[in-house]
Image 1 (cartoon, helix red, strand yellow):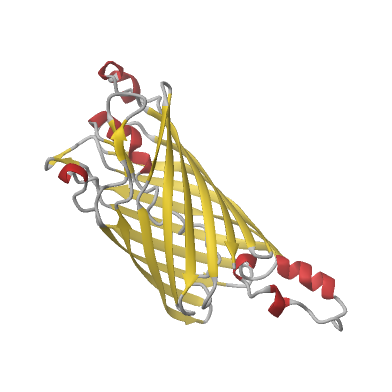
Image 2 (cartoon, rainbow, N blue to C red):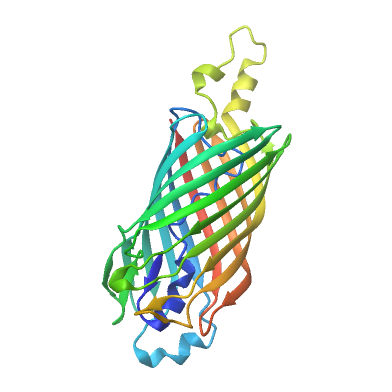
Length: 317
């Protein structure tokens, strides 16, 4: 979550409010909700987001010495671990780069720790529940590009709950998840808005195994014997996987309160159409997602969100 502590600043930075909240949820869309026991996954992401400055708010307050954001890059690094075959624990932390026409800034965001519990797995249908906590590791500092304060994070301990469902067919996987974070009072007792996200994705496997190569058993267990006539072909098929996916991503942010006064020019509901692809080789996966806004319900006077591009690198151990 990244916010600027001025009213106009809110409207410029609201589009990154969900930066650290379950930011990797949409990248596993192959029906695997929890990792196998003792399996490790390391993941890193680069999430580029633009802000539409064509709205009148971008120019109406130019004399207030508050520079509107033009775009941002949200990088993040996380790890996951299969505690059991049905319980996975994870941690993810973002680092945010802000860009304006008059200067740039950056800062460390809030650390998210999460547990995912697979409670049902039957007939290619899976259901998992999530519980987590966002920790106040994000920084607060003076802006490098104007006279506002940059707050990267909320400054509070914020509980999170979620649900994930998946249904698998031969080459298709339908997956949906919802996640809610209850934001508590943070820096200077300000309330930076609770967040709810929704994501629905249909994945089609073009090539390779039914599950992501990065989450398949180790090469020792997959390796065909020398007596197998098509050993080379089977090894290549098991090592390489390619899929495409599309769907919908929604993000709701509550109004911000400063000294218990509601900022009417904050909060929104944004809906995005998403399209992407994932290429996996052995224990590596590379998801790429492009998102275009189709719903923009911004509260008060704010600039709209623009397109988003997200690239991930995932490695299993």
